Image 1 (tube, rainbow, N blue to C red):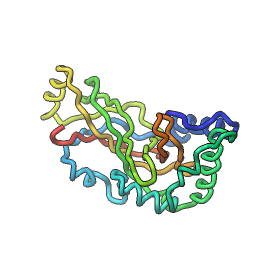
Image 2: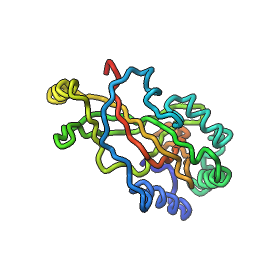
Image 3: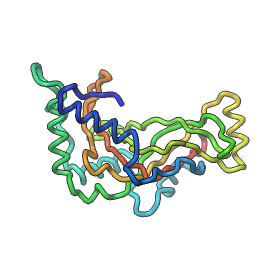
Image 4: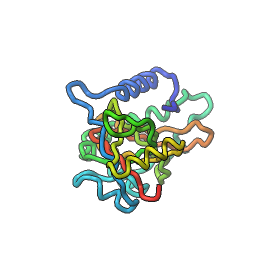
Length: 227
């Protein structure tokens, strides 16, 4: 994770928490299986593969409405930039703590949600009749800032299993050196404490970033027609 926070004492503790929860799964709870069928879909049908009762957060508008229900209003990013002589990241740290306190006990913290990451097929795994999957986050520009979901408790293995009728063509493409892109649909719930982190990108753009931390409960793979 690119760090946009400082090395102040409070921020050190915060980053320590981030890396701790990102590394594993709650004690006594098994992580979901990352070995799942590879569905072939058309783009308009993506929402149809999301379970009833799971809230889709796939489009920018869906994410904006969700954040509005959860946190009320977007940050004033101009006020969160450090001024000369101030502790680096101090304003962000205070802002995040204030939002955490207001958000505590909110009903949306227990609602199941779904979001998408991107990926591509890698090595064929004969023991699973599928392909290992490399993955990365989707960055969605919204009125709140750039939304980047952070999955917590990922499965040890991420393997997409295609149907027998498309397996040979996928193997042929990979053997020819082609890249086969797939989508990854994660489902889960926000981490109860410090579930949303607001930050500012230090990639030169200085854009506001919104990072929802989601405890993963399910993984699905999809291949869009035409890809």
